[in-house]
Amino acid sequence: MLLTLHAHLAKIAQKLPEQTALIFGSHKIEYGRLMEAIKRLAQGLAAQGVQKGDRIAIMLPNVPHFCISYYAALELGAVVVPINFFNNSQEIGSILSDCGAKAIIYWNGFGAQIAPALAQAPDCKHSLVLGESIPQNSKSLTQIITQSSALDVPVEVVPDDLAMISYISGTGDGPLGAAFTHSALMANTSTCHEMFRITSEERLLGIMPLFHPLGQTLEMNAAFFVGATLLLLPRFAPAEAIDAIRQHTITFFAGVPAMFQSLNESLTEENTTPSLKYCLSYGGQLNPALLSEFERKFDALVLEAYGFTEAGPLVTSNRINRDRKNGSVGLPLVGVEVQVVDEQGQIVKPNQSGEIWIKSPSLTQGYFNKPEETQKRMRDGWFFSGDIGYLDEELYLFVQERKEDIIVKGGFQIFPFEVEEVIKQHPAVAEAAVVAVADPVQGHEVKAFVVLDQEQQATVEELTEFCKGYLPVYKVPKFIEICALLPKGPTGRVQKQTLRSGSAVEKP
Image 1 (spheres, rainbow, N blue to C red):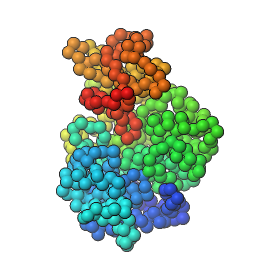
Image 2 (image 1 turned 135 degrees about the vertical axis):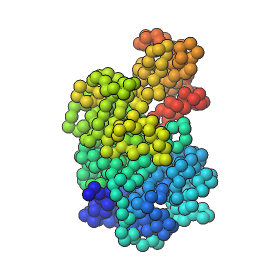
Image 3 (image 1 turned 90 degrees about the vertical axis):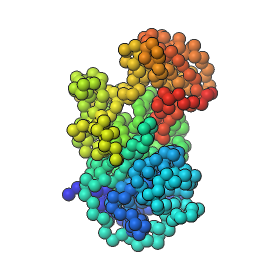
Image 4 (image 1 turned 30 degrees about the vertical axis):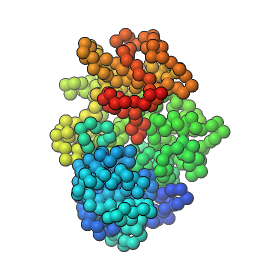
């Protein structure tokens, strides 16, 4: 019978009780002590009335208590609901209400966001707080752990039981939570362990926030699956991350392109990170020049990957032992099927663009309590990603654009990334994002938001003329807005829905 994540961790803890599971600051937690804390918190939650199937929200930074809380919930057969701590009170309250959370575990530093959110969620009757200042009607998380006895026997769960709900960021129609079973979490974790050769000898760097599916799968779950050591950093600061890699002989980490750029800029030629072997980049394409320079300076292989929350999150990745192709996010993971289809749902030929569909054992079973939304995105076990791309003859995937980001102007389709790549070639440009804006004649027009390099200057007219030298006239932006910052999510991805909505951007 397929083990669950928490049952597998119990076996690892029994086998390697003295092995270091977590490093946080000057603290080290061995697998034996980690499992003891998990069982104590599970018993403490049970004493609060938490039962199998109840939803437990977790809003904690990258601290050991996140891992303890996550696995304690699984031990009880409860459903984990990690919450993005960048969300505002309204968004947090909507999530708590949507999933019907019975309890929330949070850091007291997030109290200002949590207090008004709880007013929207009358079913969330239990608050466990990490920190010295405990609000009225709440309980101390650390006291619950230290004062509770250990749960003798974990609640019986089966692989198809619901284990976790991951809420999608950036949706305009209210909370949308991708629901995952125990078998789905186990499938993605075990596949990542095999594909990226993660063993008990590895030391992983936890710089992705653990509320994010990548942080859970390729940091926490992957480490615990094999008895590896996970070093947690509560925030991403490139200099601190480099010091951590060197001091703790980190061998592997997963991050997003913005992190790789910051790390690359912060590493001087004198610094070395000889322990680092592999890195995984997720959430957007790395600039080829940046990838090459990063690999040279860090002497580590960077594997670009692709996925999304509903996939748990990985779909494809470049391999350690296979050639990489420029611009490709690699091959489907073991057990994952990828197909590219046209608007009629017919599979297209190699190198032809269409919507990317996937089928995977780690796929969400659907959106929690949203059957209509599930039906829009899933059919016969296939999930419609909303991403446009193509497969070549060797099944390497190339992702081009989000479906909703494609600009249709006068009947012509324009991929924003093509325009963005041209604009970014201008020596004064640091970042660019291109979106559609309504036009009464063409249907849509092209608008570019541009961030200039701090040491450079350029006018809108100069940028427009520059684009005319490289793009067909219909792809040249009609509107260019120079701004100080682009709106981004917690993983560094530009939030184009914010730009399309006309929300104000910060002026330089």
